[in-house]
Length: 376
Ligand SMILES: Cc1c2[nH]c(c1CCC(=O)O)Cc1[nH]c(c(CCC(=O)O)c1C)Cc1[nH]c(c(CCC(=O)O)c1C)Cc1[nH]c(c(C)c1CCC(=O)O)C2
Image 1 (cartoon, rainbow, N blue to C red):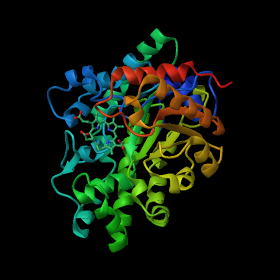
Image 2 (image 1 turned 90 degrees about the vertical axis):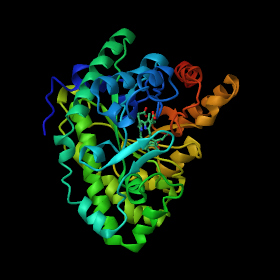
Image 3 (image 1 turned 120 degrees about the vertical axis):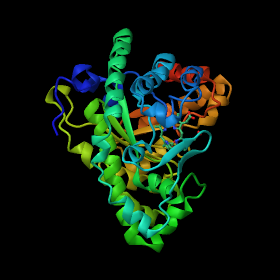
């Protein structure tokens, strides 16, 4: 598929030259770019005001609402990028799987994929339906890049949109269990109990999630992040054999999109993230991504020792530090920025999502501290 050159923000809004895209592709801009996972959401009073009615899924599928929520943290905190307001289960909802997002709990499925027959039925659904039925998502992305262009104008700095999707293992962890779980045992068990059903499910999920990424990128996202939040629950051997191939395949649809030559970059930056993934970090880095998201359990210099310095690292302030006194937090931020110098480039982020109880003022102060830092 060809992206119309004039429409893609990599060209139209020069986001190919944004700090975020440059750092993801290996440059070190003067200021380290910073954004936060879950920056759009319940830590913001303006989010709670907009979300006071209707379900989370309705908000994701209402373009005006999703785009406005996406912009809220950009305006308030001065972060270097927006992440699209959506959820990892949105592509599943688009293709007709009955799922709701329960406040305080997470995704809940009315019919979990509990048996091999359930899985066999689900994988019959054509993943192409994600793009066919994804008009509201494409529209939301278009509205968002328009709003970002206005904000970029005001700031004098191009502001890109990050698209995202859930990796097959993390999606399967919800689908097979029927909802959130602590240890993801239903999915981990299926890997061994019925390897063929597991392979069929994750291969199908890689196409569903790939379609969701391609939908966002075709509509204007300038980078794509794959969230494998729960991959850290796996034995490294199982991760490599039963999970990594489908995660790698999740990027196929995005890699197949053409990037306009005028964008000045030869491919769209791809990011791979998981929690508690220290033991599988080198594997996660091995699938041709540009950047690796690292959680707060591993210092970035140690992460570089594990993965080499051929890719950019993203992370990794413990979200708990948002609740620390500013001097303590700033000290840790400086340590992270110093440790990040070992990598080829660094994008500052938290080690996992912004907690809903976080003080928005503390989040804004992280942005200022990161932007004020200069490598000595
Ligand atoms: C595992 C996962 C999910 N969703 C996501 C992941 C991967 C990232 C991670 O590990 O946190 C990804 C996600 N979900 C959401 C975003 C929006 C963009 C952003 O990062 O700001 C992103 C990137 C919105 C959301 N997704 C959700 C909310 C809260 C919904 C609300 O406002 O009531 C938001 C803003 C709900 C959700 N959705 C999910 C969970 C576990 C929950 C939390 C339940 C809760 O605490 O209420 C599934």
